[in-house]
Structures are given as C-alpha cells and as structure tokens.
Length: 190
Image (tube, rainbow, N blue to C red):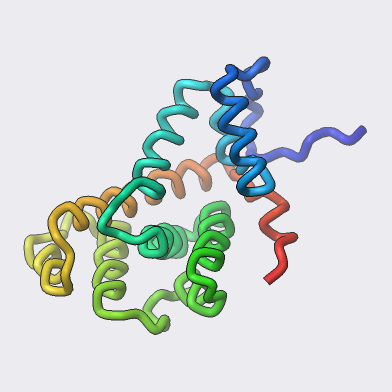
C-alpha cells in the first residue's frame, strides 16, 4: 500500500481518533463533494483550530447574506488570483464554475477579473476586494460610497470585506505551508 500523498510541507498528523463530530463533518464533505478538502485535513491536527476555521468559513460562504454564493466565490477567486494562491484558485475556481455554470467566466475571474463581463455591482465589489488585498490602508469612505451607489448596503459591504479578508488570510496560510489541492479537482469533467 502506498503512503498517503502529502497535502502540505508541514508534517502535522491528523488527530487519531477524530472526534465523532469531526468524523460526521468529514462524512458530509465526502458525500457532498466526493472528497474531504485537503484544507480540512491540514487543520485536523488541532480540532479547535479546525472548528474555528470551518465555523467562520461556513458562516461567510454558506450562511444567509445579501451576497449570493456566486458573488462570494467571485471574491474568493479574485483575491486568490491576486495572491497567486494555487490551493484556493483551484478549489474556489471549481466552486465558481459549478455555481455559475460558466467556465469561461470562472477562468476570466481567475486570470483577471477586469476582462470578465460583469455587471456594475460585481465589478465594484471585485474592485473593492482588490483594494482590500493590495492596499487596505488606503480604503476611504469614497470606496464604500462606490459600493453603496451600485446597491450594496452596509451589511453587504461588511460581508464583502470579511470574505476578502478571510481569503487573504487563508491564501497566505496555504502558500506558507505549500498546501496542495485535492487531486479530485483535476479529475472533474467540464
């Protein structure tokens, strides 16, 4: 039997045995996604860190929001593209392709969102996410005003900022530990 493929450069072992709640969560991932994402396996060396990560991720990306799931994935892919995060570009690029049912749009956003056919709301949202990623200390009220002018309310601006901030954090962690996307992402058919 071959040894399991390394998912990152650090040698951190998954807690064994996993708590029952973690096993159930992983089973749900396996059932819904056909895999357990490597980021979850990477965090599984410390169950409290895994729970914090998944709790925040699920709240930002899956809970009710004025942002659609597609918009949240657009932010994730844009930020990951700017940061050149291989792990998140692969995983969230796939999520965006699946949700939008538009592979060309997903590839354009992964390469350079500025060439994508976006509405005013989406373009302003991604420009704000880009500024958070590249130059957050220079964000001013005028930047938030642009979002309000295209229909974002303050709760939605909060969500845009949180999704962009979360992916800036996770991109940096994934890059720092050389986290690798699951092989299953590359085996999916268009």
